[in-house]
Image (cartoon, rainbow, N blue to C red):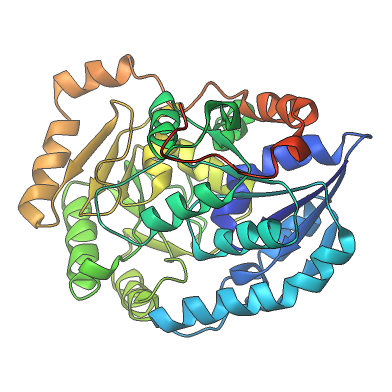
Amino acid sequence: MKILALTSIRSDYDLLSPLYARLHNDVDIELKLLVGGTHNSAVHDYTVNDIHRDGFDVLLEIDSLINSDTAKSRLKSASILLLSAVDAVAAFSPDLIIYAGDREDVMVGALLGGYLSIPTLHFYGGDHASDGYIDNPIRHAVSKLSTVHFVSTALHKARLLALKEPSNRIFDVGSIALDKFKNIVPIAGIKDLIAGRIVDKPAALVIFHPIKDEIIEALDIITNMLMTLIKNGYHCFIGSPNSDPGNAIIISTLSGLAAKYSEITLYGNLPRGQFLNLFSACNIIVGNSSAGLLESASIPIPCLNVGLRQRGRDCSDNVLFVDTSIEAIQAGLNEIASAEFTVKMERVINIYGDGHSADKAHNLIKSIDFKSLLNKPEDPLYVE
């Protein structure tokens, strides 16, 4: 069986890399990766090197990312990826194309499969946030274009059923992203990634990606988060934002704040093991990253989600949503420090899975007759 996996950013690669390892080591499967987007960008630290270090076979590396801080550049980058991939994918002629998530590049994977008559497998469909961001319609549109769906929760399956996807195309495997937490070795002390000194304060992992409705105030939101965390005695480890519009000025501002405050460490791309150790050693995750909703409960640490992004998504009891003002962020930190929230944290269970999702997905991929499901003749008026 020949499988092609499409990856265009560090986050979607980390969502599926435990599965890639199992597929790569299966003698009955030939796995190749189509690598584009930020993976091949110097600005994003050439994360294609992580793929090579992991030992996976790459079908094609595509320099598709237009390094521009605009909404137009995302569409142009996706079009370059599609145009550059068509002939290589057709020549490889895989039995299955797999992709994950809700960025514009997964639409490329769905279109390649649909028009080249190749079955496709979409991971993490059926999710939904109430922030109104483009991720939601892209995710749902890709689900309608895809052959089979591997979802993370029962609610996500129910949402796909509501979209009139037949039940025989939907499988709940949990989130593969959680599998990597099984093998984390706890570290004795957390270090400043830049200065190399031991951090003797509680640590906050801060990840914030701007969305359209918050671009204008994004700098204020980030400053509010960092200054409030510092006031509450935290050392802040903040990651650079992804390639969404508005990222350039945020990176510039963060660089200035990190130079001014010793309590702020700004980092770019980290090797997976180092990032997981940092994540698991922190006392809290703050911002609006999906890692807070999907992964933090597996450590477990509290997640303070700030602003509009991620609102309405299925989440575990360790997640608290707050507005963007200093007062709202402080109130959230106070609630997380309360005895009631501490008790809640002692009982938290990650609703997204138990750390064995890659095995489930691997076994299903080998057992499903994808070719028989390729055509989608179902009439949405009559699908049960």
